Figure (cartoon, helix red, strand yellow):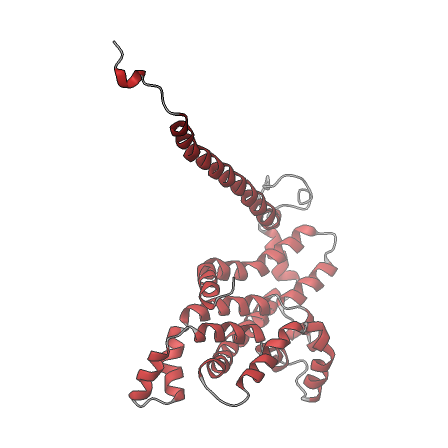
Length: 295
């Protein structure tokens, strides 16, 4: 015999209220599914060229232009040819020296400039920062000729100094560090001043240790930018012993335009340092951008 509670009719308002959470959950699931599909498609479109480049660098001459993603007979002869047919080790060494030197020097000078613009009070501070910030609107090709004339007048063409010094200044690095330093509590500096610390001691003992996270992110960005630099090394150097890896790949491609397996092997070698650096520090890049307020 059915109970009286089960026999009672359910109010229309109660049924509508119980179906509303199910509709919300259904809409959330549809949004999640759509977002998952979009992210998946973008990921495939982004990663596929890189995967194709790496796998094709292990293919032979008769297979490199085929539609097969994986090589049927993988070979490392392409990489051997790259290092024997061109001074690729020299190209990698030059790019490494320039990228590391610019990164270290830029972090040091940019952090000092950003600390002064963020924490010190002096006349014209905001005007100086505005002037530095406005250089973000100026593209590299616009200042290429004046920069070449200055470097030529200083006698720095065809030298490591000519490759390194013009690449050190970056308004983006100063801006990002300044935004980070503005978020540091003033109580830390006040306590240091009470202990008798000067500006340099505060910068060295407090500011720099707190900057490790954003330094790691900026180091990756500076390293990648200088490792992939092409235009300025092309203008500033004519000596083959000073060619960087991107110039080396361009000349290597001209000499082996019909042998794509060699060109792809050279491109894979050049991409390895950048991929390693980005894979190690990608989380710190995102954290530093969130901390500095850039969204």
